[in-house]
Length: 215
Image (cartoon, rainbow, N blue to C red; front, side):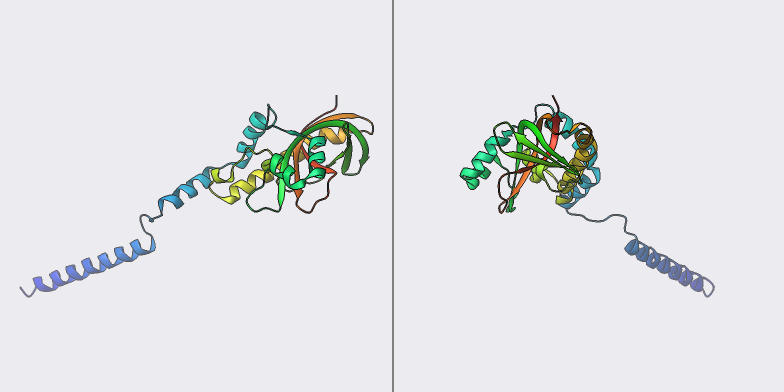
């Protein structure tokens, strides 16, 4: 008995030490984490979201082929001059409590001036539209189209990424043609987004173009 007792004790000590080590390891490196289902879905959706791919499909299938219903630019200017609140309500889209409304507009006219970075278009019905061909900021197309619902996206970062990607596409795909072909007196047709803050004066409309043609 005297020889077996130390052996049994040593085995028990080694077993207890091993179990303690396992417990510490599991604490530091758990086999799984408990994440609320709603949060897990958001994480999964965010990981899978690709703004560039989404915007490519959105641009080709919805914006440039048929596209959302666009208000005539001259009609929008007239409506604002009569009652800006009614014009924003009838034709615009406002995100939450934003201090600006966005519109999707179309029209035609002739180029009245071409300066570095800015093109001015005089509408056939009267009124003015300008296009700034530098970096594009804001949400004129994303919100003006009325086709993208923020509640359909898992988080605000994804929704904001859409604007950045849409604006990048305008800079890379639309502006080069404008810079190349825009000359004073040239006829032009356009479709695009306009963002107007509550304090802006109308006109002119500052257009972010989706489509621009020189017939």
